[in-house]
Image (cartoon, rainbow, N blue to C red):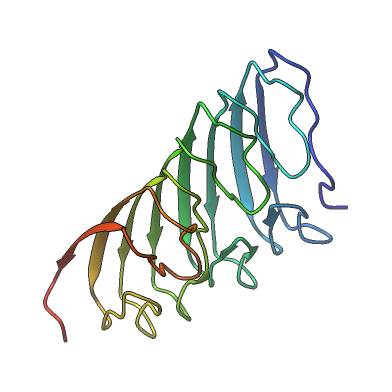
Length: 192
């Protein structure tokens, strides 16, 4: 069956794993993968305490993951990606508290992500950041339909954005910015 639960490692453990589908059921936890997903992750310690839950990383953990489609159905969970999405992410500590499920990042976390289309539907859910988080993202079209939320881009647009906190409260939904957020964006390619 799919890899269930979590990988619980004691301090100082270096860990790498490659999961290749099809899976008899989706990989559960923070990463809910449909059939046919290839997954690679590297975690480097020391971990204090052991890596718990669905990759709930404590202070000082470096984490990288690559997911490559096509996906037989959208990757569910914190990252609601439609078919054909390539995804990479890097998180760097130290973390003031453990990184929680669904990538709820505490203050001080540096996070970058690249998403590449085409998207069969807008990227939904997403990225709930607490105070102090710096966030950068690049999305490249074509989008079908346009990426929804605070950024409504027509098909074919490329977009990059940097958000710097502190955020009060956490940035929620599809880039819904609370008061006091510093926001800059560069949109490339003409609007259609």
